[in-house]
Image (cartoon, rainbow, N blue to C red; front, top):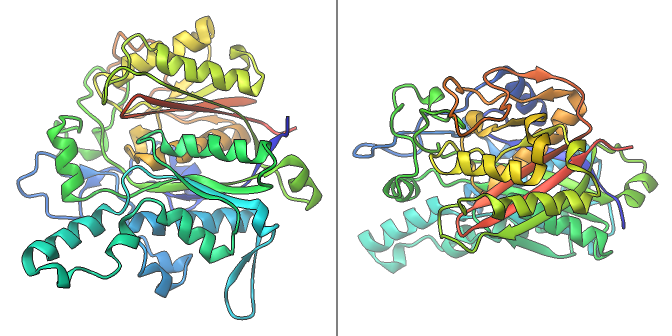
Length: 420
């Protein structure tokens, strides 16, 4: 089976707009959660989120192109620019266009996105209702639909292979990595630009999640304390936004061109709970199967994994159920490895989460640290693993796994390994 490696990474997140900034924030236990500035929260029970502050897309993409993109697409394009630059896979042509430096027909894009351009939908509906259909923005449809992030990246870089969008709610980013892995293993692609992106901090989205009673409401005056996975006093997740993008290549392709290899994407597993539209299957067997499948795909034993980046949403139901999933898959080793939720810092970036958390795993492997679960002040007795409470810890990590769970019962897990 072909070995698939990572040669580039890019990050746009509430705690950093570069990989280096993101890594330092993880070690510092920095919270990116604050008061919402994207819209007027008057009348809302929820007024906090993990926003990407001071985002200027023109730092990475052409201003004219950026104006034709929804925010989730801008995030993806910016993260892709970082990842491709690190991978040294792009050159600038004389006319200013960017060109991928691999066979364009054997290069693909697979991005996860759960919701699409919600701010475009909201504004277009407002104009439709206030002034009629002739006042709607002409680019409403191509800006709002979820596939436009993948489509725009393929256009910017002349990528002519498959360009897919994976939609499995909060598992979308992780499942996109799995689909990209399969494209390279099958020989359909040599290179895939992959990850996840989301930007849905809008009145419509926050209102919808609020009505589900899914969001934290207790700590609106201390927003940095609101996301507290595995803590007995948690009361819901905090909405975040952002994008993580990785460049994947076959090992042969990367070595042939002399690329620096950052890590190996060693395995992927997926399952569906077939239980409930929003709640995980209570025994943890559904998500646990995805973990087992990922370990089998990577051909490693549970005890070979030193770190697990949990979905860890800070909701009443998720955290103890995910603890059961980890025990189901890892057995006694669950008590010996480190587990943490970096959503305690970023909030829940929906489809962006899985890709950002895969990057967390790569950074942990390369830099030898276990990211903390901040705000874990009063551990839930039903959550009894080592969640790296409050502060970063250091140690050697050879293999790490990351799991994502989505509404509809979608479970996706990836295994990343130190390259040798």
